[in-house]
Length: 220
Image (cartoon, rainbow, N blue to C red):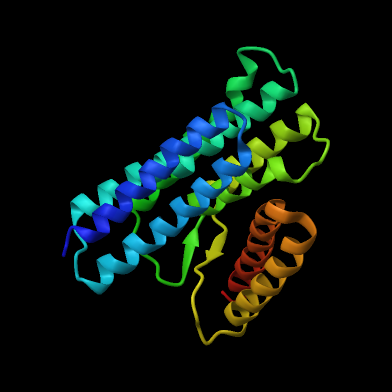
């Protein structure tokens, strides 16, 4: 039974690998669903590890390695692909992989940091990957400079000191407000923007978490 969480972790990695194939073939809808499934598997491996008392050093390492693929390499490859469609030449399109480097560094810091059950320090890599996977569905005309700025900004957010909300049912007004707003926004944005709503929801997550950080610092 204790191998179950690791199975979900490996499935996460598989979906990440398949997403890379679809990104290379510019099949962004298929890639989007792969990352959504990968994120779901990432939630399940942690849930079952706690439920079965199956947390282990091996599981922690597998989780990070799978996350590097699905939530590190994938958004970097997607950013590179989007830059190439804007006719940015080699080697500059590889700037998209700065996201991958930022994700790897963020995961390494997370592994050696004391666990904080109230919030994440820095944008979680799954949220960052979801933001990027929604961009191709926005049907917006994005310039090269704008896209490069978004690459730099998301890399900064990954390793920032912003306290990102852990999604869960809590008693705090801010957390409950965030969950309610997230649900409503997902429904509204989903109807208007389709899969592009994924990026919009992540933006809301960043805004709410930034507000939380300001409130915490003000109280201290």
